[in-house]
Structure formats: structure tokens, C-alpha cells
Length: 123
Image (cartoon, rainbow, N blue to C red; front, top):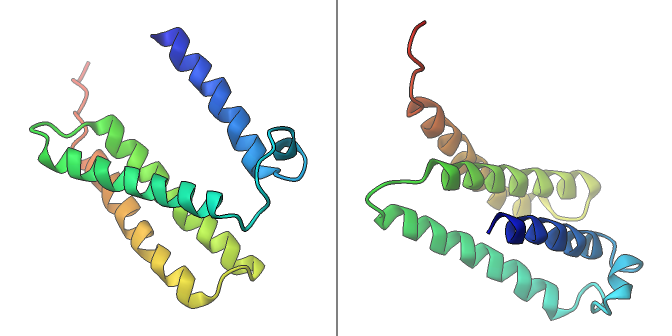
């Protein structure tokens, strides 16, 4: 399984590069042009995937700290991307306002991780 996970790392890193540079690396994979529904559908899919993960965690008897850490990273990243897009003039302030919720969740997730961390025994 670890080998397959490492293969997934390489595969997903390659896809990320293709998405980041669609006119060069993405062209090698014949990705559609920017503005295509493909990108909107993929983005929506990942937001729904996170939504399902939160529901799964909320219903689980034990909350996975690893998944909460991943959620904190995801929410922080979403906020930072929105902030960068705002500063570049790619999105209006009103659109950026939605990402403030992401920041709030990220802060709470990090707070929860810190407050529920096991205190190491004293030496």
C-alpha cells in the first residue's frame, strides 16, 4: 500500500503541475482551455468531497486528528488563494468575503488540534 501511496504522490503532483501550467504542461495532456466547465466541475467536486468528509467525521465515534489537520490545511489554503486572487484583482471583495468562513474554520480546526493534543509525559 505504501508504494501505491507514493505512486499517488507522483501522479497527483504531475496533475497539479498540468493544472497550474495549462498552456504548457497541461497541453501535453490535452487539458481543455481555461474557462472550460471541466475546471468548474473539478473544483465543485473537491468542495463536495470536503463536505462529505466533514459529515463523515461528524458522524464518526472518533474524530481523526489527521483528517482535521488536512481540513485545516485545506481551509487555510483556500483562504490564502482567495486573498492572493483579491490582491491580484482577479476577484472582487464580495467574492473574497466568502473565504473568511474558510479562515474561521481553519482557525477553529487548529485550535481544536492544539487543545486536544496529548501532553507529553514529564521526564
